[in-house]
Image 1 (spheres, rainbow, N blue to C red):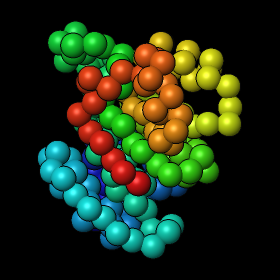
Image 2: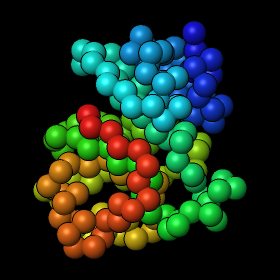
Image 3: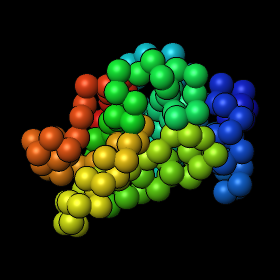
Image 4: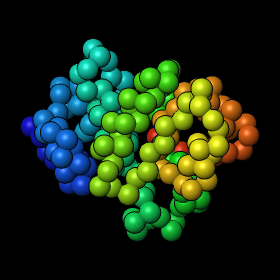
Length: 160
C-alpha cells in the first residue's frame, strides 16, 4: 500500500517522497480514506507511528488553495479553512513542520501559531492569507479576540 493508493493527490505524494516518506503506517492506512471523505474520526496510536500525517494529509488535500478553481467561490479567500489544535508549543512546531513538508508542492499554506513569541509575525501570516492553522489554545484565543484570526471559513477541525 502507498499514499497514492489511499487517495492522496500526486503533488502531496511527491512532496513526501522527496523526504523519503513512501509507505504509510497502519494508523494512516486506516484514517486517511475516512478523513478524505470528511467523516469524523478518532485515532489512537503510540507516539511516532504517523498520526500527524494520518489527519494532516487529508486536511491539506481538502482545503481550497489559491490555484484551485473553487478559490474564487470562497466566501473569504485566504481565511483559514482548517484548524488543528494542539496542547503545546513543541507539538505545534512538529505538526506545523510535518504539514509544511507535505504541502510543499501544493498551494496550501500552513501557519503555526503559539505563545512565547511576538504576535506581529503571526498576525502578518494571517493577514497575507493561509489555508491551514496549527496552534495552541491560548495563542489562538488571543488572535481571535483581537480580530486577527477568522474562523468563519473553517471546515476541518482536528484536536491533536
